Image 1 (cartoon, helix red, strand yellow):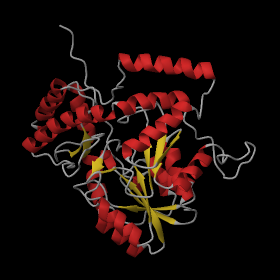
Image 2: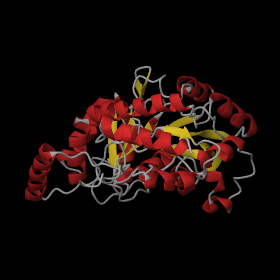
Image 3: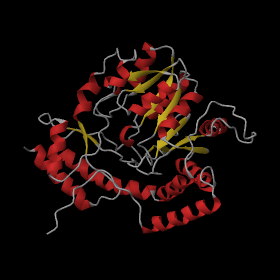
Image 4: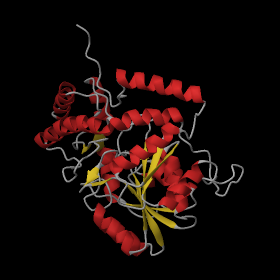
Length: 378
């Protein structure tokens, strides 16, 4: 009998039809020698905008670049930007690279995100606050999202969304990325959909979209003479083949999200059975389920859990996030970390994410659940 293959947290959803279409696309790209900013990029941007329901979408080489561009367009240099401490390094680094001053917010133990009360508290403590970089952690949109957007608008704060985890996530009919002035999606290889590497900004503002296109192309404005650089941009363009890859992924995004939902619901039922605390997403119209976040029992450390699951043939996915940003060494040199973040410090090191991909089936999900039952009952 062949040994059972380990269940891994990463799966590239590319079938035979995708391969054939991508071979055709590659031939067309090579035949035309249009390697960037060509018809595949145009089509991908139009279809992604239509998918999320915005007037514009602009592709970039990475989501990290997309975050920085959004912040530059908001003029954050020497201004204060609120950001969750429970996020990826890149979210905070983008604020700093854009010249802003990040100020962290703690999280709520039920959502692993700040709530409206955290935003209100931040504005009281930082009356010069310019705006928020919001993060849809694990693909979950906060149940407070509409209220947070309204609060920002009423108080003259910009709201930018980090949607790196939230492809296909919808709350009350609104896609992630449509609550603020703009939202940035990631197409990193491990994300819900991928272009191998890449990012996308969505917005309804035509001038904003035009400026993004300039920033990604060394500051050259559309229609301007090619030698004129009018913005301090960079080389942040997505390749044509990346766009072709993204079109194939986007065409089946809803199907991939639906398959992830099946696995997520199996996990949720097991969490309820075992009394495991988890981040609820039932308030959403649809969740990407990039991660299903849960809290370890008190008797297990994260390192012990990873080893125990691995011994059962289950590789845990990357957490969100084991070390909150205010505790990361790179940010300790900045005068940003004087506040207290008790909830993040209590829970981040104890969160775990079971493997979930669009390639998993009921059998594999149940294998993971059986391993969890065995480990947690020890």
